[in-house]
Length: 210
Image 1 (cartoon, rainbow, N blue to C red):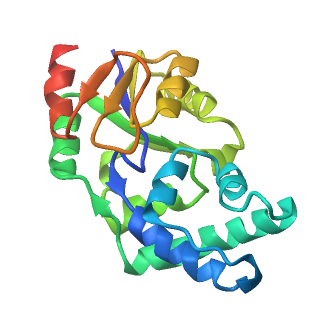
Image 2 (image 1 turned 180 degrees about the vertical axis):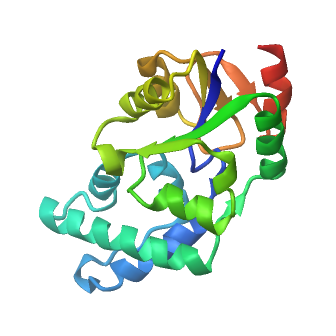
């Protein structure tokens, strides 16, 4: 049996909200007429949304074409900034990934981020060797549920779980037909009982039981 664990990224594997706020605010300063700066609380409320949905939340009174252009610039500057100012990995992440691989799990990442963001995360943290495939909304243009299902299908997984921190993550796992594991240390919470971990280190123990 080929079994896999598919991870969300922000709020599940790392927290880059502080760094992304800095990078996006640098871009927003280029548009003084907007008089807009964002906070860490703003960023946490955006987590899990697609980039242009975030643009609509961040700049609701701005013309769609302009706010999407600004979001494209934010994403570009975010990559540049994160190359020099890394996000924070959740404690014991690499040890947990190593143990899961030893337990026979294939590991994947599916996020609603722009293309290149997952790759940057893997590269700057030297975690490429642990993951077998990735997918994102920025590459396929498809919702997270479709991308989870796509990863399951193209990797011929017989059994898969999705680990994420938000209600949207749970709904996406439901849409893909895979069990959801709530990363309760992240930015959100589901609206029903589900598998739950309070740290990434607990995931190996949970997978031993289910």
